[in-house]
Length: 394
Ligand SMILES: *Cc1c(COP(=O)(O)O)cnc(C)c1O
Image (cartoon, rainbow, N blue to C red; front, side):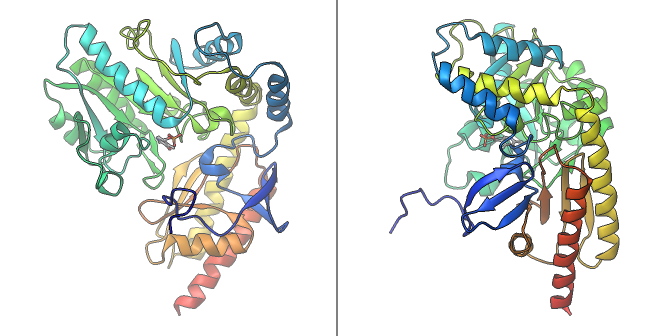
């Protein structure tokens, strides 16, 4: 018999009652170190006082009015994002998938309005993840996402991850842009080198096409910069963000340069909920914390520490761990010899929550507020789990 919740998730037999900072407490009162953050969403940890206060105060005043009217908190959030990024303008949505949809529509409309309606195709990279809409799964192109959902929207050309020659070869008269994650999340915490991002910028400029970054998982401070591409000293034309931007309140955004957004005039796109007063209040509260002097420096410092400690862990468990990768507080441990899910289940038993990702990777996306003691605690638990697995293997 089908469950009341559509059974599309392989849910673990565990439910949480409350959260505080870096920790979650399950319905039996057991405490867990959260290195998952609800897929990198809870960037300020659980029950952060600034976010709770912003939500509660806004909830007492006004929830929703529709984009028919001015939303001053939204205009303020958009201005702050513009002031702190490559972008000149922002569209607010409710999720990552919708932010991506806006990016794709924007590229098509850009070329259409410049008299190049045939330039509708986007080049994307293998093992990507761009959300679960039909366009999002078509863009990612992975069979595990698309099988059974055909026919898919046309217009996506998937090339091997990081392969610049393949990107160049895929550009044709119908290519309108390139859309990639600077650091792939679901695909297994795969980092595109700075030189690759710079080369993609050059390729787009030479071809007269747009560069779109999906920073839904790697953006909003996750790598220690507000946006991951800042490490490469270059800028996209359009970027999607979500996850961390709402700190747990559903919020996504499409950021763009003025020229890239030039086709998106009145009536061309919209949403009922997107950017409503509740979401905007929390989004501003997230930025209040993230833009505090020193906040992102601390993320860089903790990211460096996490990666140094993971490198040591890999040395101790070189029989199990073949690679440690990632950037900032986005880290992956590659374990080809064991089902990643088994290790995650073991760690949950030890009171730590990591996650799985593609390519046999154990993924960590801790809240950005962590300090050294949490990294110590995580390493103790990881070390114990890998020791137990190594013993089982003998
Ligand atoms: C999570 C994610 C999405 C989709 O976001 P939703 O809010 O689940 O729709 C798209 N791209 C990337 C890189 C993501 O990590």
